[in-house]
Length: 428
Image (cartoon, rainbow, N blue to C red; front, side):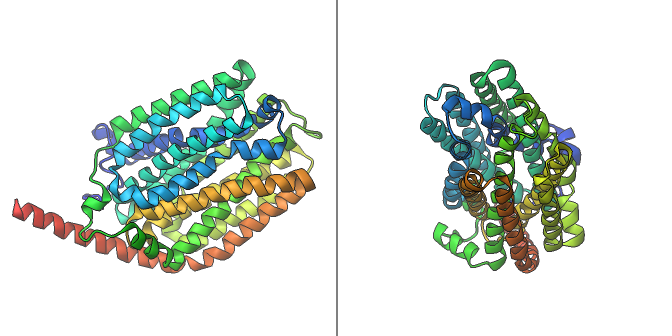
């Protein structure tokens, strides 16, 4: 690992000296996240249109659109084994460049099965870029600034949820489904270009380790760490709830009593706008109150929004969606940053396991809650979402020890790496 020498959160993530300033760092981190995952949830905003194109039920279309989470879960597992051997900048650049290919091909998908397969491939490349970027941030952040850097990254994720959905809805409304996917392929290429000028090359984690560890031993270390195990499960629950909410609410919005247009469905996602501002505060909240209270507060806020989702009033529904968005994104930023602090070994593999669990939660949420929605309706679906958030709150009770363990491990790694650098400079 390579903790920042001058206490800078991401000193190496810069194009020029001005980008070393905190706002510049946060902007680049956030924009990188935006362009990495903008494809992930934007397609949810056009679910009703896609269901018409492929003559699919809400549950079938929901699973096909969210099949990207299967690819992301698989990539998370692969990255957990291989990330320590991959140079971060090259891996992110390669992943984002290739992501544009399945994105463009979605415009030509002739069947629902092929559409779902391309979404899986998209997920593979998105998660590879996502995991390697998280590892880069973890390895180039000072211990005190890790939470802030990760909060900036998740804020970019939040922005992609809002502006990606708005863009998708507008493109489909004015230019059709195919044009939508071609434009998003260009955004993937823009992400690769940003990474090429903003990330500096760093040695793979394996080359930085004083005593190399096998991937199996790293997995064993992560899975034997109780706070990390709990965090993996919390990630599963968070995306389970998020996917269930923001996938199937689209079908609620286009039916009575709301019956709004496709373009208006896109405008609904302005409910994510408050989350862009609040998610940046996750790092400050963790530093002030700790991980557990911050998670509990975020999950409680999301839970408060759930009853509003079943009120037959558009204003109440929008407020409920805003609260669920603020709470789940705040919880996600908190949990993601915690993984980097709690891991006692290679943070890249720990992030890979976390993301695999997180995205499996999204896939299972799409499948299970889709069946609940089709068979029992929206109210039952919301009840399932509430159960997932409640389980995450219970699991959060196990996280306190991880904060202390992570701080100790970070100090040990910093001392160890500093000693190695002095030895190398002395020998040269």
